[in-house]
Image 1: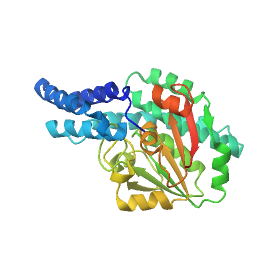
Image 2 (image 1 turned 90 degrees about the horizontal axis):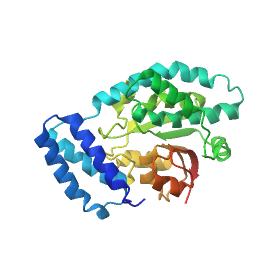
Image 3 (image 1 turned 30 degrees about the vertical axis):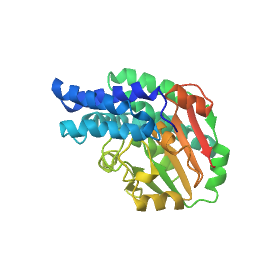
Image 4 (image 1 turned 90 degrees about the vertical axis):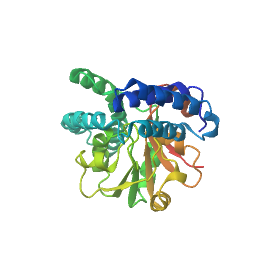
Length: 286
């Protein structure tokens, strides 16, 4: 997906946030923003927003020497998610029919994306979580997913942010008859999950966790490890989580996959045919 004009202020805001997390030295923050602004002027050379975002955040790392500016943010997000995990289990428990249970397990996994904004008052987070859980999918290709499940022996999940990895555990529990591989970023980028983050999320040891090798906030296959690319094309089923992965993979023609996300910006919502903040579980095959 192309880099839209709407992406530019969003990416620049992220870089400013990351610079402030990494250092309190104004002169360093200023140097980061000067270089980032210069790069932003050449945005047309990037194929999508995740590629641009990855390059922008490398500027922060270069100037500050901090490899993971969001380390503490991610740790808190994971702690917050673990605290609400028993509530999520209770929320899913009444869904006894297999179709309903799978629907709501997918919805819980998608709702985990709100953990991005989960910094602050715990009661506010719980209120927001309950409201978001109650929203149904605007697009839900569950019938197609169940058809694909009938023939599948294994599943690849491409993870998104660190906190929502806890929410994903309920989805993986609902699909426990499959051999599941969970893929994360190759190195820290914004608040996206890495292997170290997943270790703190309480994953079932039977879940294989792998690195994609990519350093961008979205899965750009050309930048992934060869081993992961083979896994991506050979998996029986693939679920790609989050908007960044959607932006990077929406033009993929080599295989079918399911996108599971919350549409957080107007341009992505338009492409998906939904409203901003709608939830989507969409089959993609070109």
